Length: 177
Image (cartoon, rainbow, N blue to C red; front, side, top):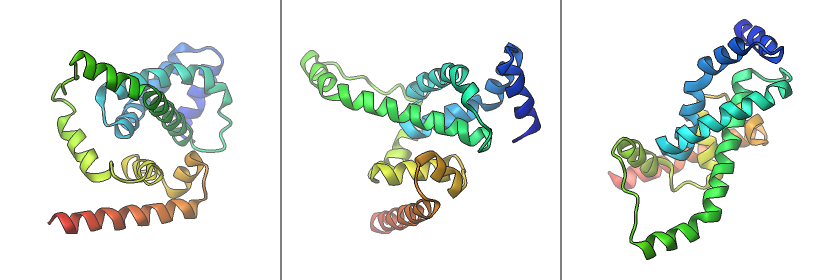
C-alpha cells in the first residue's frame, strides 16, 4: 500500500477529516470512472460515486490491508454498481409502463451519447459475468488477481472470461466488417 494511503487511512480513522478528504481526492476519479464504465451513464456514475464516498466513511475501519487500498475501494464501487443495477431491475417494469402511459421518455442529454454508443456496441451484449470482468480488467486495469478478489472467483476464471471476451468481441468485429 502506498505510504500516503497508509498514513491517511490511519489519520482518517483517528478522526482527521483532512486525511479522509485527501483519500477522496486521490481516488474520486477512479471511483467515478469505474461507476461510469459499469453503468454507461454519467448521471448514474455521479450518484454512485457520491454514495461510495459516504459508504467509504462507514467502511474505512473495515479495511484490513490484505489487498491494495485501490483494489478494496474498487470492490466497494463494484458492489455499489451491482446494487444500483438490482434496484433498477426491480423498478424497470413499473417505470417502463409508467413512461409509456404518461408518454414520457427521458431524452439523452448528449454528454453520454458517444460513450453510450461505444459501451453498448462493444460490451452490452456480453453476459453480465463477462461484462463485469472486462470492465474491471480492461476498464480499470486491475490485475486478474485483483479482479478475481472483487468478483469472488478464481484468478483462472478471470483469465478464461477475458479470453472469451476477446473471442466474442473479435467475432463481432469480423462480422461487422
